[in-house]
Image (cartoon, rainbow, N blue to C red; front, top):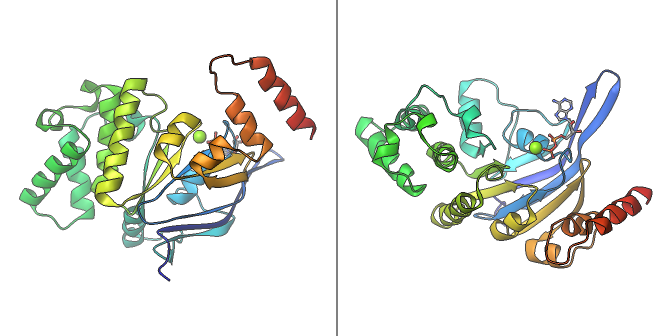
Length: 273
Ligand SMILES: Nc1ncnc2c1ncn2[C@@H]1O[C@H](COP(=O)(O)OP(=O)(O)O)[C@@H](O)[C@H]1O
Ligand SMILES: [Mg+2]
């Protein structure tokens, strides 16, 4: 049997601050097949970003393993190991302003990534920059401008293009479309779908927005206070949730005839249980 693209086993991460201990992630695991996409959902503070940071190696788990193509990812030591790690998993954060250098034109930023991660010569890099920009629906014009001259949606596309420039096996998106206007969000979601089809990249899509997760993800994992409360095929999980916490998340989405009181009641019951 061939190994899955990404295998995450029993991750744990505690934070100790001034005498108190927070179990940010407590025993979360999943498997992502080639070209697959998994959603990680849960309310604020449920441990989603801690998962993301461990996946990309920004933080070491207390225990558990992460494997890409069957190969365990260790904490990278040295330049070669860091580059290899970057090739395995890339991330796009919620705020591209924080991750893009404000003084560097978009094309130069992509060029810097290609110089670091590929053997392409000048001409090859120029061609590749064109391809990457067109893959995320941007053109020549955007290559020459500074990030601040772009809209929020365009900046987020640049952040995605920059992650793709590394040619990673897995792309983690941590609330990457949450701050975008809905129409721009729809464009970026379509784009992710196309990229997945074209490249076979695996997506770990972190979001608190269940509607978005339904659109993007084959599988979904629900986290509550660091624990995995439910995992399964997205449609099944969202249409027939079995965990009370998933039911609560779903009941909290406003819709016709929605009663906020019922959500408050459900939460109270859950907390008593
Ligand atoms: N660097 C840190 N130091 C201490 N506690 C942290 C740190 N990062 C996250 N936490 C705590 O871990 C829990 C999970 O946080 P996080 O992973 O950011 O959740 P989410 O992304 O789902 O909102 C929260 O209780 C948060 O306060
Ligand atoms: Mg977060």
